[in-house]
Image 1: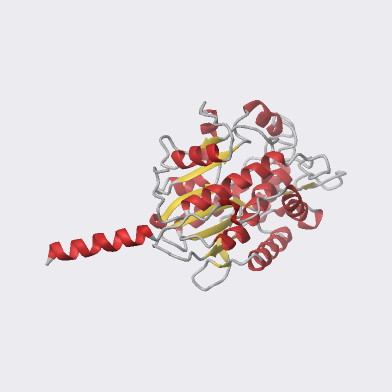
Image 2: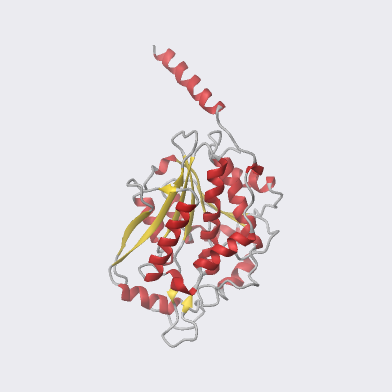
Length: 348
């Protein structure tokens, strides 16, 4: 009897695998500059006051993300069907860094603001697109929606750190993928997670990892998009992931399929603990951050010593979104492949 049951189980698994589908890439239009630019323009507008967690800017951001997820065809990812996961933030007592001193322009005022906030809370926004042939596994896309808020002292000509690159760009890319994922009718569920309080120390990602609305063991691939509007088009793809990541074969294969080059020098690994994929990776979830922004350290350092965490991180007509568009489309390809039941981490 045991042998007979084993044979039945094996046949069922084979049948399930034979139903796995990878829709053609041409089934949906690629992400465009115009749509990314439009979404970044909204999120980095002064009306959102720099999207600091625990502020009116957060309320406006949460409302916008929820409306957009609904409009684009996602359903709420929380057990009660809602889109928002509230998490508490303990009172902060951080040392205020001196003005200047090599730190970003908005860091001192931001630190004062979080110290003054006391006990507060923020929210993750979570949606999902249901798969047509679910197998109990899922793919996750993540981006942090928050930024530094009013990051210059009262009376300054421009007080708002708008965070166009960090991270309206990643948020816009994830939103752009929602309706495409829905149109592709992929096998597996795809989850879209927009985290709060990343700038406070990855707090939203930690809250999601501690109380996830889906089993973490069910996530076969997770991708975090952060600060993607740094590089122009044509940059090689680098990966930020733990050593020997099981997702590297998938990212390499998708990179080749799109005609992009691979950057394998490993420099991007320095950012592994500085981004929202880290709390999930620590719990065994296959997570990666991939794209062109982390393939040119000189260009990235120029951003970090320039507009980063300052009022200058704004969207202008001159903002080059070529690399962000390419990276958004790279992630569309990654999800298209990973959400097939034929995909297992470590396989192409």
